[in-house]
Length: 325
Image (cartoon, rainbow, N blue to C red):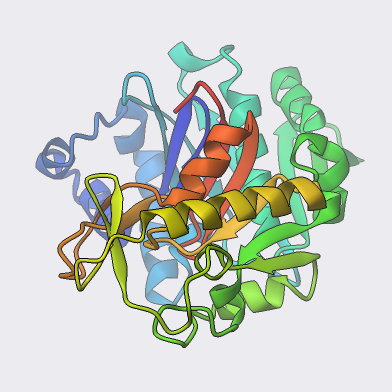
C-alpha cells in the first residue's frame, strides 16, 4: 500500500487478476471497486493474463500492477505497473490516468510516491520509464520528479532515475541524513518478549543507506522483556490490566527528539505495535486481532511534522502531508 495526500495505491492480487480475466463484475461489486471500462478491454486483459503467468512463476505482486484510487471519492482513477522483478537492480515503470482525472497533478504525485517506495527496496538501484516523444505532459512529470533523459529515438524518449539521487530530488525528506528504524526490525532484541522482529530486507537496506535504530518503549523506561500491551480507548494497557500510557508517550517524545537531533524526516516502523504501528494496531483484546490504527509514536511524529515518510515492515509507505489525513 502507498498512501499520499490525494491517492491510495494497492498492488493487485492474484484474486483480483483472476476476476479481471473472467470479467467477474460481481467480485468488484462485492469489494466496492468501481472498475473503469478500460480495465476489461481486450488489450488490458492480455496484460492481466501475462501477470497471472508471472505470479505462477513466483513474481512478487508488488512488481506487477497497482490500482490507484482517489481518496476523496474512492474512485479508481489510474493504474501503474512495474515490468517485473528488478533485473540487476533495474526496474521499469509505466502508468495511465483515466481522462477525467488528468491535469489535476495526480501524475506528479503518483510518480513521486512510486520513486519513494522504490527507495525503501534494497533490490532496486535504478528506475526507468519510457514515453512517446509526443507525450510532453508525461515527460514533464518525469523530469519534475528527478528523472533524466537517457536516450531519445524517433518516437520514444527513455528516462532513468538513479536512487542515489533521491535526496536531491526530494530534499523535504532529508534522506541524506538517513532513516530512523524500529530497532527490533534490524535484529536488536527490543521486542516486548526480549526477542526481535528482524526483517532481512531492512537489514539489507541498512547496508546501502544510513539508519538510526530506536525503540520508543525502551526509551520510555520500560524493561525488556516487558508485559505485552495494546491500545484500549486511547490508553495503553498491559495484558495484566496495568496502564502504561505515560511510558509510551514518553517514548514517543524521545523518538521525536531523535528525529530533531538527527534532522531526519523518514522512518521505518514495526506495524502492529502500540508504539510504532503506522497502519494497523492490535484491537485491545489480546486476541491477536488487528484493526486499522496507529501507535503512540507514529501519532506523535505525524502531529509534529508537516511532511514525513513513514514506511513499515509490511512494505506500506505513507507519504505524510499534514492536513491530508
